[in-house]
Image 1 (cartoon, one colour):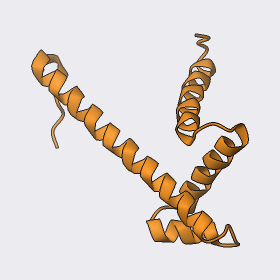
Image 2 (cartoon, one colour; image 1 turned 45 degrees about the horizontal axis):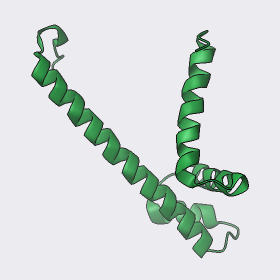
Image 3 (cartoon, rainbow, N blue to C red; image 1 turned 90 degrees about the horizontal axis):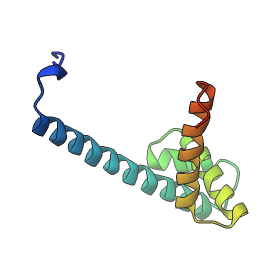
Image 4 (cartoon, helix red, strand yellow; image 1 turned 90 degrees about the vertical axis):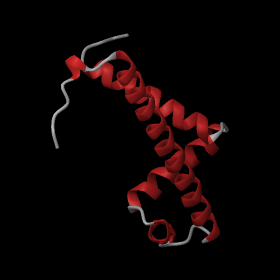
Length: 107
């Protein structure tokens, strides 16, 4: 695999590359959101009994921590009475702000 010389990349190629990354990342986000919703649905289907998170993870082929985080987001959305998508956006924004503040930026 060779390194790309970004200094000689023309503008159109850079725009196309950025568009491709944006599309790919949007697809990954959609897939992740669907998996989170499936994890919650499987957990609810199993009645939330002991081992339901591990079973949901096995069925989806993901790590148990993924299911745990999905359920934490769902419980938070239920507690605050706001949609799950809003919780996802809120967490993304606060994560970025926390990261900036840890670097000494207060904006």
